[in-house]
Image 1 (cartoon, rainbow, N blue to C red):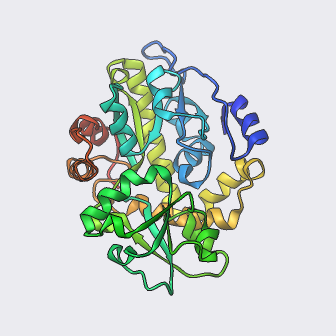
Image 2 (image 1 turned 90 degrees about the vertical axis):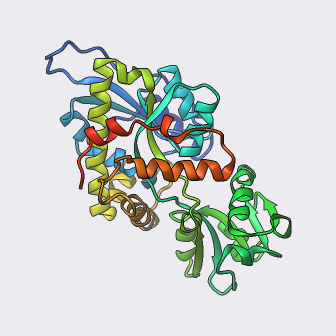
Length: 339
């Protein structure tokens, strides 16, 4: 697996703390008709784990090379801003959420998404199974552990679901599973493949209120490039190859989440303290999220219907952007196979 070596060393030293970004070639110019691989880099949205299993599996199995791309994967982290890496040209493609992409474009970034891995939102409110909390309205009068950055999300979500925001006691920062298990809070915000998995591993049952079930469907792991990269023949070919290879890696991960988890742990387990059991449990959830709403069109494929779902989401959170401007549907559909 070809991972940026300077970043791998940083991960080994810093673990889940800061990661120092290193630069690599975005895409080399390759003469037309050449059999040489096109060099390109991919920026992960966070430190490597099974959330990024499509790219990691595809790289491990040699799919990128088979699609004509010599790929370097750049691990993310708390000090890595994926959209800035793409805009600057340090990487050819990177992973963003739909909200992050919209914010970047609204600020003037020349970015466009050509694929979307998780078209079912992982965002959820997590509660203990015996809490009596079964729907958003039940959070009124309760303590909700929330990330500070989630305030923008949960205000509109509560408005959408008829929850009186002022009646929810928002406890900023209390989002660790321990806060819920100990009773410090009555609910926490999180992702269905993360906090619930960690709590169930302790033998404690939890329930999830999935935001996507209420039409609040923020996509994640969008595959994003600079708009002008699609106008460059060599870069466009590399992007197409990266999409095809990633789709193949995603298909393998969906078919065999345990195998995908094994790949991730074999490469990053020792450096990041990843455990096979928890990564396998998380991989099963991510696989379900990846395949839940994309079977007809094909894994990773962006459709007009999907773009409309993101317009509905942007409208709900008050983002004044046009979702149609953020996605290249034609390139996605024409490049990727339906499953």
